Image (cartoon, rainbow, N blue to C red; front, side, top):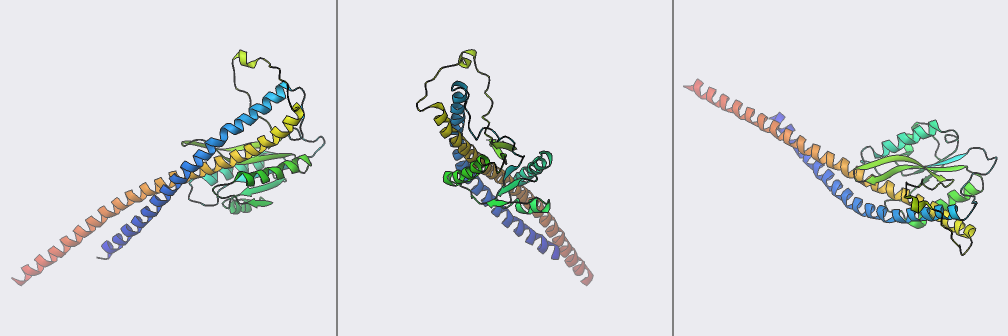
Length: 291
C-alpha cells in the first residue's frame, strides 16, 4: 500500500511539473515570435547603412574617421561586452556564450586585463568563479529600446575616440534562423564593414558620385549610425536566440515529463494489480482454512 501511495504522489508531482513547463513553452513561443519580428525588421537597416558606408568610402577618395582606426601609439586596452540573459531555463544558451567569452579572453592579448562589461544576471557568478572582474553590469530587459542602446553605443564611441580603449568587441548569440544560433565575437570598434560578396562585373565598376553635403560630413553621420545599428542588432539577435533556446528546452522538459508520467502510471498499475492479487490470495487462503 505504501508503494502505490508513493508512486501516486510522484505522478501528481510530475503532472504539476509538466503543466508548468508547458506554460513556459507557450510563453517563450509567444515572445519568440515578437522578438523574431523585431530582429528581422532591423537587419535590412543595418545592412543598408553598411552599404552606404562602403560606397562612400570607395567613391569618396581617401576618407578618414576616428572610429575606423586605432590611435597611433595607443597600448592595447580592449573593452569586451558579454551579452547573457537575466533568467535561466534556456538550455545551453548562457553556457555557450560564456565558454566563447572565456576562450576569447584567454586567447586574445589585451582582453583579460582590459575592461569587461556584462549584460544580464546569468554571467555574474560564472565570471566571478573564473576570476574575471566585471567593471559594469547593464540591464536591458527583454525589449531593449533603441534609445538605451544608443546611449550605450555613444559611451563606447566616446571612450574609443578619447583613447581610453583601443577596441570594443561584443560576445553574443547570433541569430540565423529558428534552427541555428551561434555564439560570436563581433568587433564593434574600430568599425569594419562586412566583406563584399561576389557580384557581377557590371556591378563592380566604379561609379562617380557628387556628394552634397561633402563626403567627409556624410561619413561623420553614417559611421556612428552604423555602430548604433550594429549594437542594436546584436541585442535583438541575443534576445530572439534566448527565446528560441528556452522554447526548445521547455518543450524537451514537457515531453520528458509526459514520458515519465506514463512510466509511473504503468508502474502504479502493476503495483496495484500485485496488491489486489495479494489481497485476493489472502482472502481465499483464509476461507480455505475455515472449511
